[in-house]
Image (cartoon, rainbow, N blue to C red; front, top):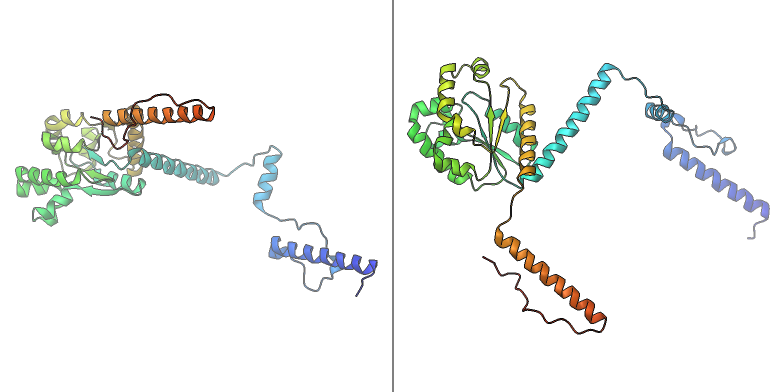
Length: 315
């Protein structure tokens, strides 16, 4: 039936009250909800005020007053900020590598395995390989994969290097790997050439500190190895001084920074035929665009050379 003016007004008021109730229940916390026995006439249309430490902090910051944080809160904030910075840096490094593998070099006794595992973890899609652990089962000595010194003493350095060369031939074609090697790998020019297929990082360390940080190699043994392979180790793409007692994650992040700096200073160059090919394709596209412009203005196209087949490989 027809509704009088007063009835329509009351209906509109009821709808507004219901909408206010729905909004209050949807956005207010449980502690601010009105009891079900409250009548519609006592409901306020003003939004419920939320009580939250975050809102209080925002209000103080709007007024220009930065609240004092406790020492524990400051440490937590700094740790969180450092974690985000490391994640961004590792992601940037992973993108810059474009799948290239990373070879870690160092003196015997260094924890290259620990650093390599941490670096692979930071790079996410990379996997870690320890050449000694790969060589040991191939040489029928699976229990000696933890020590290149013991494995070499068992099978002889000549056989060890032969296995090393064979395995590197397979590893060099693999993408997205972090590989820890024995320092003697650089003495073989063939092996050295295989390492250069990726990015070679030499973690240089103080011999005296390294001798005191582990007991598998004496100071004399480390000095002898440094004299034997030290010159070649310095030819790595990246050489950085590290402390044997440094945290693994700290060293891994320094490797990431070194890789980024290397790639920034030495961007990969495209093959000459690719550069020439791209230049000719671009020239062809510009000529076609110019012809289209002339045609739209009623002019005949300019005479041009035969079109370049973009699949042609320019020597």
